[in-house]
Amino acid sequence: MQGIQIIGMGKALPARRVDNEAFTQMVETSDEWIKSRTGIQSRCFCEEEKQMDLCVEAAGKALADAGVSPAEIGLCVVATITPDYHTPSSACMVQERLGLPEDIPAFDINAACSGFVYGLEVVSCMLGSDALPRPYALLIGAEKLSRIMNFQDRSTCVLFGDGAAAAVIRPSDTHRFFCRLGSQGDAPALNAPGVGYPEPYIHMDGRKVFQFAVRAMENGIRLLEKETGVLANEIDQFICHQANERIIRHVQKKLKLPKERFYMNLDRYGNTSGASVPLAMAELMETGSLNPGTKVYCLGFGGGLTWGAAYLEF
Ligand code: ACO
Image 1 (cartoon, rainbow, N blue to C red):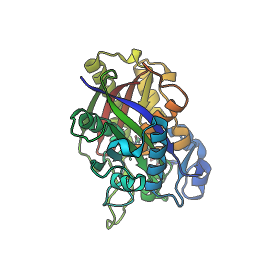
Image 2 (image 1 turned 180 degrees about the horizontal axis):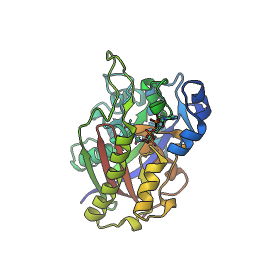
Image 3 (image 1 turned 120 degrees about the vertical axis):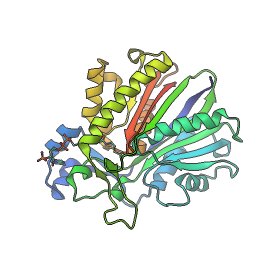
């Protein structure tokens, strides 16, 4: 089975950092509630930056990290629910801004917080098909969620943040990859209607999504164990969607896995949806925690409702 290898990553965050205290001016909430119920302490929000600026910055850094030039890219995919334009796709706009070759596929994936894991599977299938003109893929997760947040709704506005991260990926015979994706259509649980609808903001049934998230993570880990033969206690890093510290801790404790193998950065970024899994991965890479031989489970869940579970080797 042909696998994939992530050979470079980069991240981009807006300059403006907003702490929990700032929300007490907008809605009835407190730093204590937000910290204790979610683990979030601050997040970054765009001011002038567009989602595309974050995509281009993260992608440029990933290419530099991988030592790959834009001319060598054979596929460009962006996981996002907050593209700047309905069309062209963010991926086509990245292609234009970075001067990627003009004979490559470029498209977006809308799978909310599972988007980057969905992207890994799509990239792995396409890199394995020999259909691409060049051997490297650029996969970006990027969001400007502040654009679709209702700052008068305390049940959602304290949760989200903006950001992006990108990966350069190549096919590999020596790095195994396995992925399973799923969805259970449920718009009332989590949605953000488009422009023209009366309330074009994120709406979420937090409790329902919490229960789905815990189930999706547990099932994802069990499924990966069964299909890869690599047991959870042999995994070096669990890279989970960063929605809520309580979701991650619940699963870690229930499966009796070591706390330090579940990286968390949601305290600094909040829930950045499609950017969340790659932001965590990029930071683990920066700190030298994804060395050759490192085994990773990636677990995404979110709007759709969607879920994705992937096994990766570094
Ligand atoms: N400040 C103060 N009080 C609040 C706030 C706030 N910001 N938000 C809600 N409350 C109140 C509620 O009104 C409620 O009050 P009540 O008991 O008087 O009705 C109380 O706090 C408890 O509310 P719950 O919703 O039960 O709180 P819970 O502990 O479930 O935490 C949360 C809510 C953080 C949203 C949690 O349910 C969660 O993390 N859900 C999962 C979110 C997730 O995983 N999203 C991923 C996908 S996102 C995507 O795909 C874009």
